[in-house]
Each structure stands twice: as C-alpha cells, then as structure tokens.
Image (tube, rainbow, N blue to C red; front, side):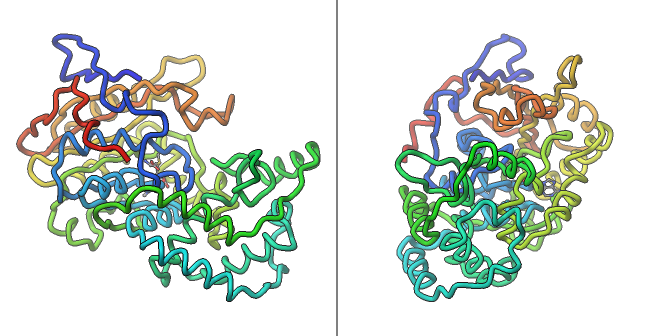
Length: 417
Ligand SMILES: C[S@@+](CC[C@H](N)C(=O)[O-])C[C@H]1O[C@@H](n2cnc3c(N)ncnc32)[C@H](O)[C@@H]1O
C-alpha cells in the first residue's frame, strides 16, 4: 500500500509510505471485528490521522460511522469518539463498541438469558430465515433473543446492547473445520446473499443447518472481543441523518468542540445496506426496504447530487470544528465500464471549494490491494468502486501542523495490543 500526499508533496513529487502501510494485515483492537460491515475501512487509517492531528481528550466525529471504526479508534487512543449513522445495524455496532461494559457483566448476563430461556413460537418466522437455521435449538433461541430485545433502539442496557451487537457478528458465515462459530448454514459472513440465491445454493450443495447453541456461541464471540483491554474512554452513538449532524444534541457538537471529523461517506451507487444485511436486520426487527429507501437517497446520487450532498456534509463540518480542526473524507475513485476512473475526492473538492470556508490541507492516495477491498466479493457486479481510495484532508482556520514526519513510523510505535 503506498500513499502519496499529492497536493502537499507536489513540489518534490515524493512518494510517501504512510505508517498504516506497515501494519500487520489484521492490525487493530479486538473489538473492531465484532461484525463485518460493507465498505468498512481498516482501523489503522483513522488511527494514523487521529495521532497526526489530535491530542488525548480531543473529540472525533464520524457522521457515517458504519461499524464504528473511527470513533472506536478514537476512544482507544484516549480521545472521545462520536458516531452517527442512519442504518440501525451501524448504530447498534457503533453504540455497543463505544460503551462496552465489563466482561464479567456480559458473561453473567449471557448465563441469565440462558436460564430464563423459554422456547418461543416460531409461527412468525419467515421461510427465508427458517431455511438458514436449525429448528430445534438454534432458531428458537434466536427468536427468544429477538423478542427479548425487540425494543432495543429505545430501551436497552449497555450489557444487552453489547450482547445483541456481538450476536450480529455470528448470525451467518462459513463453516470452519474446528466446528462453526456461526449460526447459519455455510454462507458468506460479510453480507447476506439474496433469499432466492441462498435457497438455490442450499439445494445445489445439499447444505445442512448446524445445530448450535446460541448462548455458547455468543459467549465464545464475546471472549474474543475482550481479548484486549476495554477502550480508554467512552463515546457517543446516534441513529441520525448525517445531513443534519451539526444539530444533534450532544455537548461537544453544541459547543463546536470537534477537533476532527474522520469519515468515509457513501460512494456513488455502490451499496444497498438494507438488502445486503437482510438476515441481521430481521433479528433486529427492522424494515429492510425502509433502510434501503432512506440510505438510497445518499447511496444513489447522480454526480451533481453527490456534490451537493458532500457540500452539505462539509458545511456541517465547518460548523462544528474547532479552530485548526481537521475534516478527513475517505472517498474511493469511481469507475464506469470503458471510461477513465473519476477521482471523486478531487472532483468533490474542485466543485465544493467555493461553497465552504474550510481549506485544503492535502489529498492522500491510498492504493488498496483489490483482495483487501470488501466489494471484491461481488465480482463482476461490484458496482463502481475501484481500488484507489483518496483521503481529502480539510482544515478550519489556522493551519494545523503535522506532528510526525510523513515518512516516520513513530505513530505506529506507540501502540500494540
Ligand atoms: C462507507 S460506509 C462507512 C463505513 C465505516 N467507515 C466503517 O469502517 O464501518 C458509509 C455509511 O454511511 C451510512 N449512510 C449513508 N447515508 C447516510 C446518511 N444520510 N446519514 C447517515 N449515515 C448514512 C451508511 O449506512 C453506511 O454505514
């Protein structure tokens, strides 16, 4: 992975390897892999910018938090992380990571749930869910948890939220030889294939449903998540529209006390977050079509619409940032078949710069190897995402200094888990 600070280093044309390039493949705190999420970024990327531009105690906000990578990384680094997302699954994952209870409390509660378990009726379970799970043990336990936490968005403790979020991570996935830690028939973990596709897949491959105990598997998952110490600080998560994030009733937002916005906004026409998560969202009692409709508004823009959308987001950043605060946007290049890829980050800045008082610090190029990019799993239908992510770095007021040389590995030396 090579990164080039294109604008800043233009004069000497230097190619600069960023510190995240040296990170081991699965680098990161054990809470990050709670549940895979489409279009997530590796934790080393926000961490690099957090170390570079902020101090302990500073507040860092991600208005498109997804599974919570940036705000979690902020809390791990002793900053305060805030995550906002309109997708209930993203909100659940972010909020669970930002307010993790003690391991002891979580384990005790899992045992309590196990003891209180009463087999529920399966009459409301849709056929496409039934085909995935064993009817004797696994499915009734899942329905029990679904019913137990049905009001999770309004009324849930930190402990129960953490359990529900951990369950999201094991709802479906591939068998492994040492027995499965996933609950479904063998299928990808990252996203849910369409019900019709799964049905045919089961028939063609003669797949059987594993009979696994949900409580045991959640316990196993939780133990893995707590391999590292809990983050140094707690953060805040909101189920809200990023377009109005500066209006959220949070003390740091109200006081315009945000030192950094670090985010990866939805790209042009790439992901249907509802449809691709229909199994997890069933358990959360969510209306998949509604999620796609709400998110589609921002995932399905024309180029002009996208620029307007980004202008709104950048204006919100301008409102909440402190002096010398930084806003970083990870934006992938976009390819149309037979056409030159569009450098969307550069394009956005060219179009938006007259509409904001934020200034350009630089644009980083991040060449992701294609095998590491989640969208590879879609093969030919992977939409318009390409291998190059660019990070548009803007600042407010006085220009911030770089703390570390761009060639330095010192940022990384400070933390190992
Ligand atoms: C590229 S993903 C972010 C992934 C995240 N960086 C991570 O590591 O998990 C973009 C996110 O934007 C969210 N989103 C799209 N439109 C939104 C909106 N108007 N308001 C808030 N979130 C939105 C999607 O639900 C999705 O989680």
